Image 1 (spheres, one colour):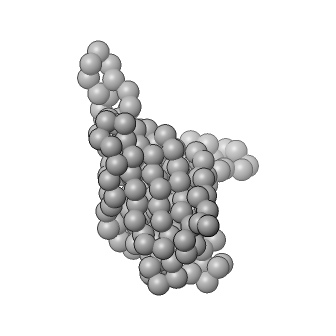
Image 2: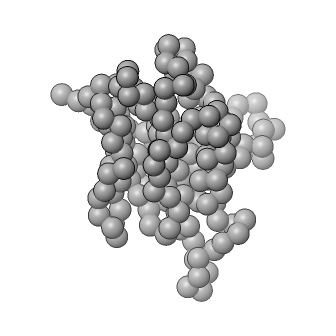
Length: 165
């Protein structure tokens, strides 16, 4: 029976073959997924913030927490398993604007969701990984399941139901 592997906040995991990766409660957070169609390997990070520079004074930084450190960490570990970054394609979900002020969504620099999405896209460009699909921004939270055998990413929202990308 296939396993559903839970990816918590500021976490990342790998699934193979019939297994899937699941994460819940993406508000302003972003799920970054990578898929190798040939090897049927999937990876997912639940990214909380766009930039680790503000906390670099700490000796240990949780790489999965930040857009600027999650992808490089994932690629390094996947490379150790013999998986080439050249075969990956990416999908991105999340980055909602979850905060409003007097009936208006907060924009600009305060919109962490939008900043997360932009930072993840910049990292994908830096490592030349194609972004093949996304469901980002808006004002609705999401939960996702990513299937290693097919590369299908199932998105669930309270307001819009379920859809696959």
